[in-house]
Length: 131
View (cartoon, rainbow, N blue to C red):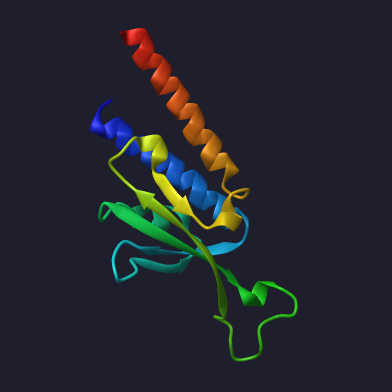
C-alpha cells in the first residue's frame, strides 16, 4: 500500500468519526500537542485541515450546554460540557487510525468502525489475491 493511499484511508475514517460527533451535536477541539489547533468547531472541513500536524491528534468533543434544556444561564453563551475524546494515531495500519476513544462514544462511532473494518477486509483480500 502506498503512503498516499494509507493517508487517504486514515483521513476517510477520521472524517467519518468526526462527522458522527458533529451529527450528535458535539463541537470539536483538536489537540495535536499542548496547544489546540482549532477550538469548539462544527466545521468539518476546518477540523480536517487541522489534523495530521503531528503523528497523533486528540479530538475533544463537547456539548454546548445552551443547546439543552434548561438553557445555559444568561451571560454564559459559550458554556460547554466536555464529553469525551478520540485519539488518532497515524502511520500504522490505516484502518486502525482510531487508537482510542471514550467508552460512551462506542455506539456513536459505529459507522467509522464499520468503515474501518470494511476497508481492512478489502485490502486484506487484495493482498491475498496478489500473492
